[in-house]
Image 1 (cartoon, rainbow, N blue to C red):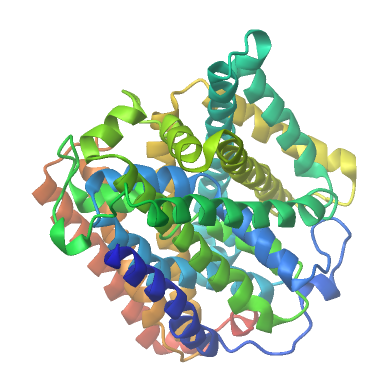
Image 2: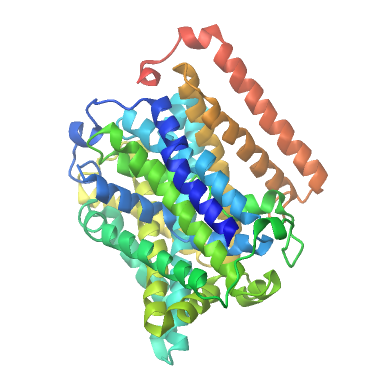
Length: 486
């Protein structure tokens, strides 16, 4: 239990200490924000800070800090370290700069930001990569809750269409489609802040259940500092990919600009972006702790997930056992709302990126609908795959996107003579992780672990060397484009 509370204290303290350093390094000021300057009544409009925080938390959370943390718990308490330090030094920093640099560039999406600071080629790569990732996110966050709702009705003794997963999947996708082209204040601005409060209450409820009940023992990190995965899956680099949104997530770079378009002042950034990610880290820590305490060992946890490794049953067992039928039902509904409230904004962000790329006016509702149609066609096609397969590809694509984003942020910091190491060090680490994973994993090139790690180190150090050379180049400082000086 001591390990859990130490990590919890580090996360909270990280917001006030390292978060403050990150905020001072960026240097927010009182310039006019896109919400005030553009204000199109659809995506750009002023929202109060508390709503921005709750919406940001709900949109970035999704299934990541729950399903990802539960899957990460298979490796044992070592997952605490990645959730804690990954959140403070990588994930929260990544989310902060995703939002603040979007705000400095008229609410631009991450693909456009990457183009500004990494060049036109990377812009085009990120345009394609980010849209594909968002479609994958929308699909993952439709399939997951559909399976959980089906399980609820099946275990409740219901029969017929309510126990049909396809029915719930179609219903969720229809909702996504409608929410994608409505203005941001119609559903997201009104309902999602309430969902955000429910999410926090739900996590605190199940977390308190484990801490208070003496029947459950939270394992200490120092007593189990080893790989406990029942299948022997190595910690490096699998755990860092599996526990995505609970530590760092490239997907968040697609969501932060949506909030950057609704801020009234840059000084809201630390609370909205850095603070929301710290809160997500706390949620991930709680769910990892629940998994490690509720089941006697990693093998039991793995068995509960079933042969396909889906944590849906685990969520149900933990919630109902700790909170009873009514409280457990409310907790499960909270878990259902999480991915649904993220999936629709994933498709919304993808719509915005297509609109930016092809200069489609989004004030016209018909054009918004037509822009969204091809995105949902791709999402429907992906639902034909099994959930664990989609999750593995999503995990790698998600973390790879975080690498590109961190390098772009590092360029901005270097050009402005600021402490770029706060983003370039996480960029090096994540580049190594993503490269090693795709070289070693079954979904990749299936090389040996040694060869994969060496390739990962070489690639990341090469990127760092190019970046440092770029920083020292006098030609770069003499040819700074106007947009980069914002």
